[in-house]
Length: 254
Image 1 (cartoon, rainbow, N blue to C red):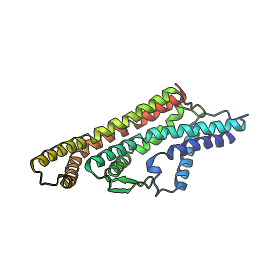
Image 2 (tube, rainbow, N blue to C red; image 1 turned 90 degrees about the horizontal axis):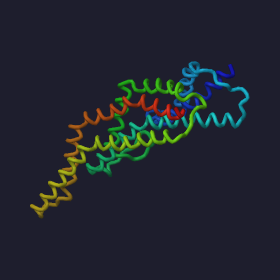
Image 3 (cartoon, rainbow, N blue to C red; image 1 turned 180 degrees about the vertical axis):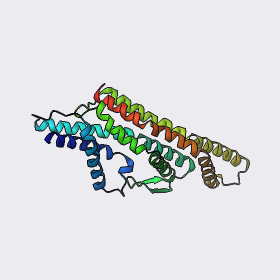
Image 4 (tube, helix red, strand yellow; image 1 turned 90 degrees about the vertical axis):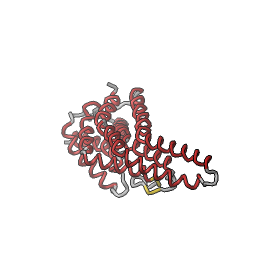
């Protein structure tokens, strides 16, 4: 019974660190007590499926090391899982910059910081697709399967792990540019045409007229390419379980 309680406690630490990173569970309208209760319930489901761990003759420093390893493991897995939301935020910021909506800020529901409207639109689109495709269930299943690759106390910070995280970070910028690429091209062409128009009609105030033209052009291109943007985000969502397994494998050093 004591071993079961200790196993549950260590799983609870990893689950709590994992859920503290996911944006859906870190929104301000979700109380901390709900996240803690959900982490405890997840630990109740996962702990009985794990093999027994030798808790006997563990010193206090050994317990501190186990807690630190499980916390790092949960944070790293959650950080890689959140990469798809970083893609949505980065793409939304690029789109807002090209449309000239830098000053049109709204409150981010995750951290209560001001953010641009296109970034919030991409974030909500990612959340809707994740919940609609039941990806949250796959993430919980992947979390349980990480114990087969990175068991309790087996997490290690090694060079292949940092290389893997760097690859995921570079993918954020690549996919974000792919999503915002049509908007960047449309903004460049519209500004180029406005520059020619300014040379042809010097009396026209091109600077004042460019705001409405950039916003109208950006909204039109955004509406036409929204399905393509959703497909890019969908591909990132489909890779999440594999990304979790890969990171767990590098955490164990195998």
